[in-house]
Image (cartoon, rainbow, N blue to C red):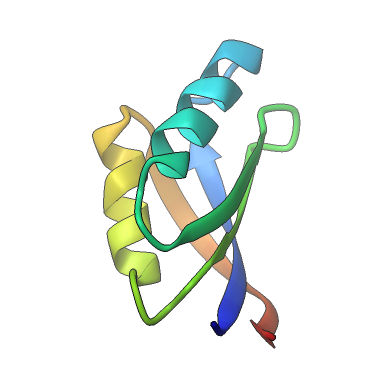
Length: 80
């Protein structure tokens, strides 16, 4: 299984409860290996399987949870 890491900038995440809402919501999505939200820095780091879900679909999922996504920073690329 190939894995990729991306970091999204999240708008509207103000506390630990927001972090937990995002991480819990994304953990239920097929293809997400790990999601780590950080409200202090306003970021979300995601390790996912690009063969099962795209970063665009992950961004849409974050929006569906009530938060806004902006910039995407490419992580380490493919992780095997």
